[in-house]
Image (cartoon, rainbow, N blue to C red; front, side, top):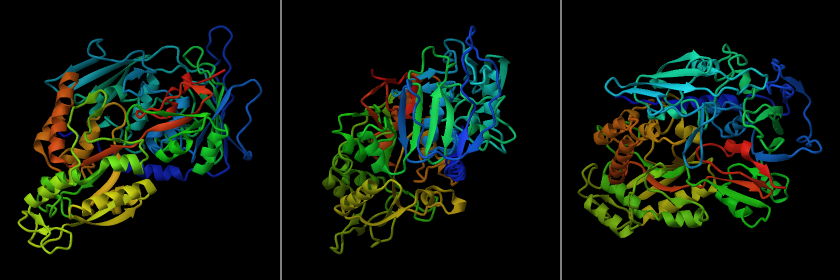
Length: 601
């Protein structure tokens, strides 16, 4: 079975660049006034939201009215829109969570729970009907009744069907996880919809939920504008805990409590101001002085700087999502075929294992990253899929021995090895490689690159260091992307799977078919039939079987070291000590549970 999640990454980068230039600094976008609750039924009168108007910018974020509770979130840049799957900046997801709901959401431990859905469909409750022999399945979603958009219209199955058709429109939509596997989506009645799959797809529970996907209002969004560019993503109609009141581009977004939110009594805070503050030092100072209440994505250095501040607390996710990793290209530089053109030494598993042994991960995590990051050596370290894979030892002496066995020796005494009996290079070929990383991460990653280079030098591997913009490393082959074209030898950057299911991510990084340029992100050009067979078998609804398969895959990855995992970077957010309920979440943004936030009396 050809499990192809599609080259979503490239398309999303392209669209993100488009949205990054949308809007002008200082423009104010106002939505309609928040709908007042009705007297008897709790359902407000249906009113069409007013068209947005442009006003002169205000000098600073609005001061909350007397008697209202208010908090301020600080972020460095405007969200490109409220459609997080299009821009994928994180800031779009932050504000999207305040105003829009998906069928489901995911908590910090990876547990999926219903939002718009009345319950999670399963085989046991009849919501999932799977035909293993035919390789098909149907999933029935029941929508909660009584949830309404801010104009009083109910949220129904029509909105779910409309959203899916907009997303998958071949001209104006885009690829999203699992979209290849859905043949059609049908409305059964006003509150029931069925997804029909052409395969067994274990990620169905976050098909229209999780971190980036929500349901959009069919009566409000214009299908002619298209999913990736529609105006309703700039002036959203809320069914979430808050309503967008004002967006002063470059300065602030103001949200007010949604009086018709479906969870009675929530949210507990009347107003949320999202301030755009580009300078990190200013954002930190605002937290220290009590002028801000939530600092999104607190890095290791920010945590360190705020650690002794009495009025600031840090919330860290139970796990880190992004794992810093090395990508050793098994194909010769400039080639994308590791079978016909193997790399002179990275194609040898013993060399990859030696590189892993030679890197002092604890020193990097504890000294460069200030002790906040945790060593990680397997893709299966997060619940519910954890495999007991022994940690590779840091042993430069054993690494040297492996390189000797692989036929790489320092024959001329210059401190670096040459081929002397190796099987994939000519005699005398130097053990020298280009070592790349990306610029946007900053100083910590550059220091890490330099430290790893020093580690490799100690075992006789010479490196030439270079830093590129991420867009140059990761863009598509036709645009000159370094990795898609195989024009690298060893790369260093961070990645990890979103939400609670790793299957599509594993396909993208390790599947045989994903090694083809434009078809995935197996940029190391690793080919392993046993692994790919297991990966196909992991597309099952039998959770016990999946866990067993994943741990078999973990063993292969540990033995072969196609990608060398180092450590998980901290996923944390800072918040004011006057608040409670804030919890960082690798499966979503910090606002995932904003309806539960409270200000301590």
